[in-house]
Image (tube, rainbow, N blue to C red; front, side, top):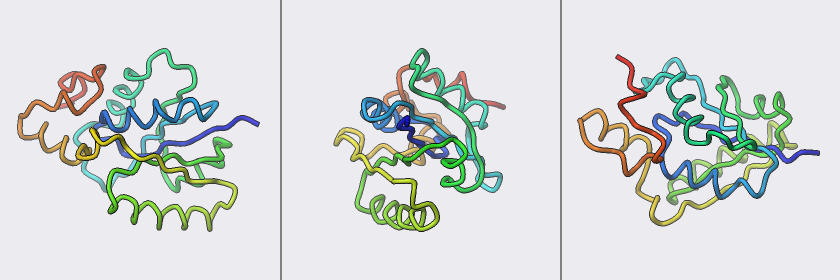
Length: 158
């Protein structure tokens, strides 16, 4: 049976921290599905199509990665994709508390799906999408916080 992990998130934008988690997890799984969540109630800077494109650009040519969108519960998406794992990155103790509660709830709903946490590298601890998005909105240079394959202006829609 293939070891398939789902790495869910809004990824608005996808950061160097996200990229590092995926790269470190690649040897652990046969496939990692980077699942961009659709949430009509959330105000995103990048359209879902552009978030899918930017992540696909980062992992172009990597056969063990699939980039797709999803809506609804992550555990239901895992079942649909026959994924036995949810992959999450942890930056801070606040992340841990939130992710721990979510992981327990997911396990109660889908005991066949394990949640695995990877700690971010210390160099990525302060990097989060909310702050990166704010830098972009205010006209700052966020290029050091996103993967090299992402040129922000290419993905901004008017």
